Each structure stands twice: as structure tokens, then as C-alpha cells.
Length: 191
Image 1 (cartoon, helix red, strand yellow):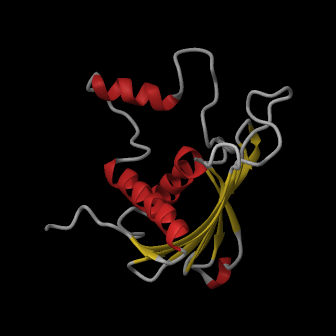
Image 2: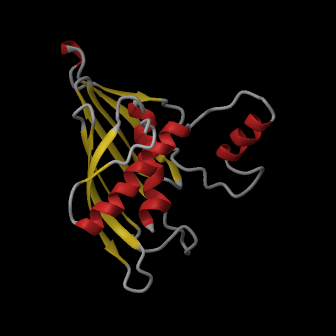
């Protein structure tokens, strides 16, 4: 369904950027809409409660008309907002158009800079997913190959980031079925 296929990318980005040690999910409440034809989830809304008291909400849908292979192609539209005591991070755009967005930090850590917007990585624009079908493959594949060759590479999602994302999505599905807030099953705890 949509949560496993697409929301995993968003969750991994959130855990990576916020810090996988800072956001440790503990409980999740979720409702999903399922396809009459396939039974797969096509949209959802969830609230994630973390062990440090942080809470975030996320929603997603595959019901945007068109798709990446239609004519004209329709891109994914991503919008992520993270609010904290030192300001807010906003990252949004169209994944087929790097000029459609950017990563912004709205300052909240300094009285003189309160509300000032700083564009992070200004040369990159909105680069959420590498959709280029030409050349040697996406950057994630090149990083995998570099790691196999013992070369330096960028770790976009390490094993703990992946675990947090899988734990969250698994709890989303359980919550949808039960209609209740569900606790994260933590496989990292010793038995």
C-alpha cells in the first residue's frame, strides 16, 4: 500500500533530519482509506507520539490524479514542516522540478533573527527523489556501489532510521485495524 511504498521515504527523511536519536516513536494513531479494487491503503492520516514528548502528524495519498508515467507526467508533491524550540524547518516541492522548492529554516533561536528565513543548501533546490532514468542509476544506487567498493559514501538512511520508519508504519497499520492508539513494538529492547 501507500504507507509502505511512499510514506516510508517521508518518515526516513523526518527521522534523518530531526535525528533518529531525538525522535523515538512510542505510540501511533492512524486511519487509512483503502482501495475498493485492491484493498491496499491509498491514503492515511496519522499522529506519532515520541518518547521525548515530541508529536508529529503525517498524511499522504496516492489519489493525486495522474502519475509519474502519465502524459504529461505528474510528480509527487511533498511538504514537510518541522516545528521546534529553535524555529521551523520547511521542505516542500514537486519531485520532478528541483526549482519548485527548497529547504528553509525559519529562525526562532535568536531574538534579533526571530522569524528570519535561511535557505539551507541553496544550490540544491528541491531534490527529494532521484527520478533520472538515464546514466548509471540514481544516487542511492551509486552510494550502495561505493559502499561495496569500500569508498566513501553518503548514508541517507542508516539501519536505525529504517527501523524507526518500519516501526512507525507497522503501528499505523495496527492502529487502523484496531481503531486505537498503538504502541511501537521495539525490537531493540533486550528480552
